[in-house]
Figure 1 (spheres, helix red, strand yellow):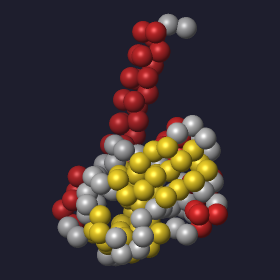
Figure 2 (figure 1 turned 180 degrees about the vertical axis):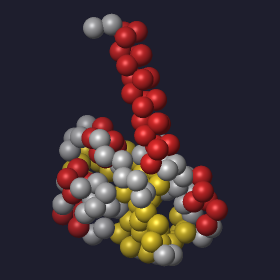
Figure 3 (figure 1 turned 90 degrees about the vertical axis):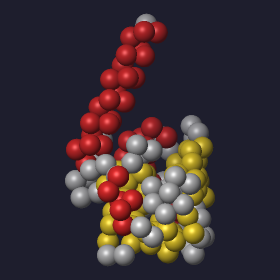
Figure 4 (figure 1 turned 45 degrees about the vertical axis):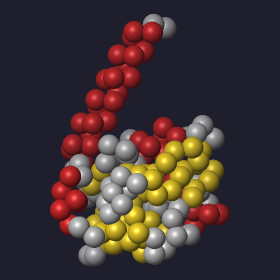
Amino acid sequence: MAVLQDLKYTKEHVWVKFEANRARLGITDYAQETLGDVVFTELPPVGKLVAKGESIGIVESVKSVSDIYTPLSGRVIDVNGQLADSPELINQDPYGQGWLMDIEPFDAPQMDILLDAAEYEKFLAQIQVEQENQQNQTGP
């Protein structure tokens, strides 16, 4: 499972890449793997104002439908139009062609609460331990 060092992460499995005055968002490799084959995305319109913690879209897979929560308040300045016809790009390249949207953040300090790669890897390790403990409690 890939965790890129130059990105920031949330506990909701969203990655953020900051470039000048924009933040590119997508779902992590862990999220796409957990979801399974992505078959549909619903993204906000360009220009929409979004608030930190708000659901700003959905990713639907063969297993489930999941909300995407923004870690930043701001304005949506671009969305990945390729996902309308090719939602599988999220599975194939979650950190590249499978990006979801770009947001122009309103408040720089909110970026400081995001996890760095090492913190996100520790969080994933905790999830794995919890899942193993649950399996051990329920038995084979």
